[in-house]
Amino acid sequence: MAACVSVLVLAGLVAVIAGAVAADRSTASRLAAEDGAGTSESDAPPAASPAAATGAEEPAGASPAEPSEPPAEPTAGPGPGRVSDTGTATSLAVLRGWRVAPTQDVVEVPPGRFEGATILRRGAGTVVLVGLADPERVPPRADPARPDPAQEQALAAEARRLADAYADLLAPGAETGALTDNDTTIADLPTRTSVRRVEGGALDGALVRVSALAAPGRTVTVLAVARPAPDIDAEGDAADEVVRSLRLDEPAPAP
Image 1: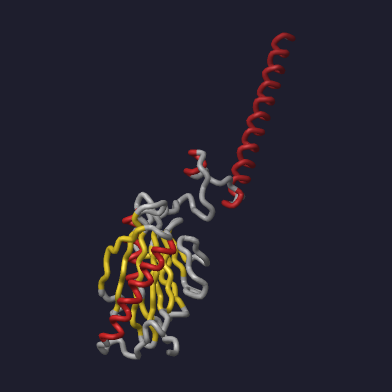
Image 2 (image 1 turned 135 degrees about the horizontal axis):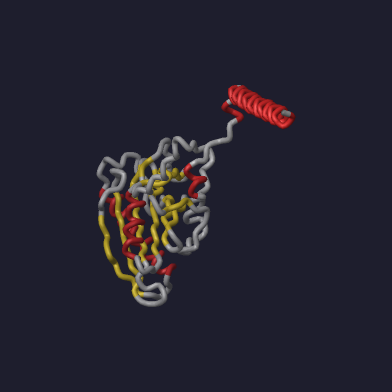
């Protein structure tokens, strides 16, 4: 009889402990649910971005949901735009591969000849400079649209003289080949252009080009030089393109 009573008491204790454990689990579940309901989105840990998953750095300011677009491929064509030359009241296109430079060491220029000139440079050996012609050599005319045979002859003579002179400055004593002497207009102005190539010596193949243009009230001269390089013809073509981009700015300088 005593043994039966002991078994009943033990069974009751087990039931009480089991009920207490169940109640603790229920309370814990309820508290966890209440705690979860009170958590804001800002408290939640950030979701891993695709970049983080791959180990790559995410660009600043980019949203994982809206990845930034890849950079556009560079395209051929005009670069920064145009650069104005105040001394001649003209502007040149700064084409791709060219830069505006404060100085140049491609060709020697006598003091005062291109004082304050705009200088465009491509690589290490190609430059374009803009200046004014000596008015005593090429008297300016007010209206370039009116034919003036004497002045156009002076334009041609000045273009040839300068091309020969700068080829000689570039390579003193070297032979010079006359490539072209033409009257193709630039900026719709009467123009004479002479191109020379150095033949022989350390600067064999160097190109010198001079264009003389009759602008209203002044004569503009443009010097382009390309020193020898594996792609000398391409350098010469690039310089030619810059020279042909010349346009008149306003106002024109006083005669």
